[in-house]
Image (tube, rainbow, N blue to C red; front, side, top):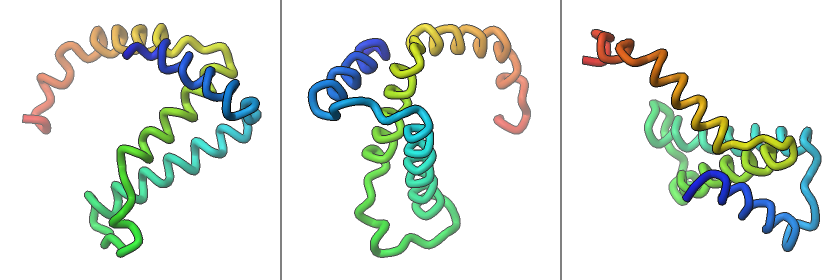
Length: 108
């Protein structure tokens, strides 16, 4: 699915179910909170911290989806075309890093 369609789907949900967007500052705080939940899972499940019993039921995919949803909302609120931005970013990274990672001895 294209990012444009994801933005439209989030916008439709907000208008039908969510009543209205939270303001940008609130959504930024919510994004920070959601990223923190992803970080907690990663640190405990894949890092060196031990995982608590209450963490075992946490779904990384669900938390990543929460992050994505808030990013889509922020993009919609600010008039950002994420598809165009992502495409431009991938082009830039590809041009900039064409040989960089291939020549990185640390990655071999």
